[in-house]
Length: 244
Image (tube, rainbow, N blue to C red; front, side):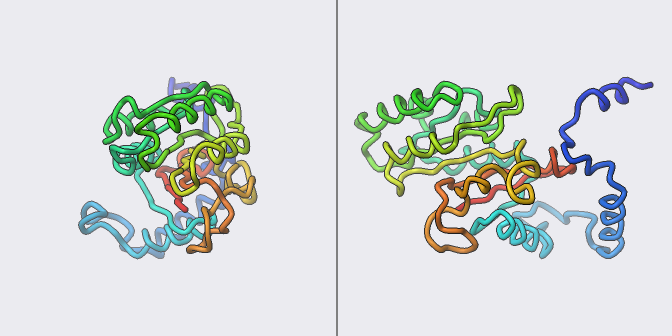
């Protein structure tokens, strides 16, 4: 038995065993046969590689995850890095769980947010989060109108513990006006496993979709952005970010 065989048997994120499903395998080959132009990107998606299939899949994800919009990435890592490197601006704050995924840290290091405005709180500790948000609210720069981003995971893979999302969201509401908050939840290890048809923990809690009646959103959720990866329960590769 090769070393690779031993490794494959010892560890896997293929939670639903989709990679060994004969039905999924056949559906994959059938789709390949019916899509003669599926091979070759013809370039980056930004310039010339975007297809109607990309857009159709994003619309499907937006509907499935009860979100007004969805965006595909090469991987969940790329999705986190891209979001945190580009969306938060110099006046904003990013508050994150101390055990949040390394991809979030990589994105933050490339972001425009000053180091002093990137603040961690103790893992899954609502009281610690409350202290951090109180300090931000009471600081001179914290009252200038920037967005407060909060980065957590719904299920932390290393210890297998769940984030206390209801308590976290309540504390954010206590200290940050709704129009100045953006909660980002990484659902890499809960997609496909939790919630109706695997829609994730945020959807199960009724916190998906953002506010108002925009797009496909349910209009009641307090989570602004969700990251779903395909390399775990979905059994392939890629990542997707749903926003309110």
